[in-house]
Image (cartoon, rainbow, N blue to C red; front, side, top):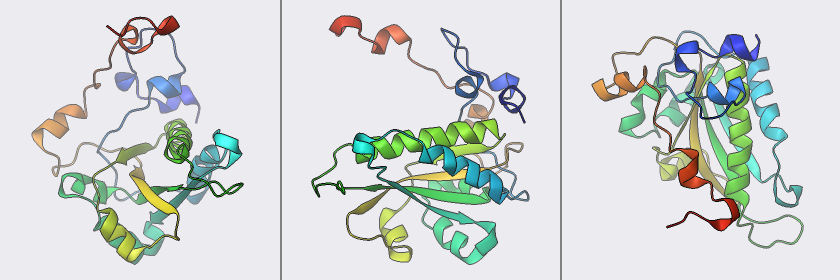
Length: 204
């Protein structure tokens, strides 16, 4: 599937300047087809994209715990960690959690860029998912304490975002009216001149 074919025209962002179709087509719907699992080779391609993200000192301080319908019991435990507002994500056939390593390997010091770098890796994974025609929705609404109870991490690692992955579907009944409305509308974006400060100007 080409990048152009995988981006729904109705969801293409109204950009101020031309950008790649993958960027214009990336969004975060809540509608998943629960009956259609994601093929392993596509998941491998998604996380291969994450593998090639830049990072401070090339430390690559990201990890992912990934749960699929292939092991339903493990997936169900992970789903129970989601917040009530993200119950719709239980329809996704894949639930992943990004993880950041807190310290550098090369000197043992605190890596204050680890969350930033894990985010960069996850954005590349999201764009690869768009190219494959998949939904890739990142979330903050989950219980880290509950997740760590079931799937503890080694010392020095911390969970970051939850990620629902799957094929798109029509909006399910579980969505609220507001959420259903968002499924058919692009979310607003600040204009560039509000956040790009050439030569340090424009803050006031």
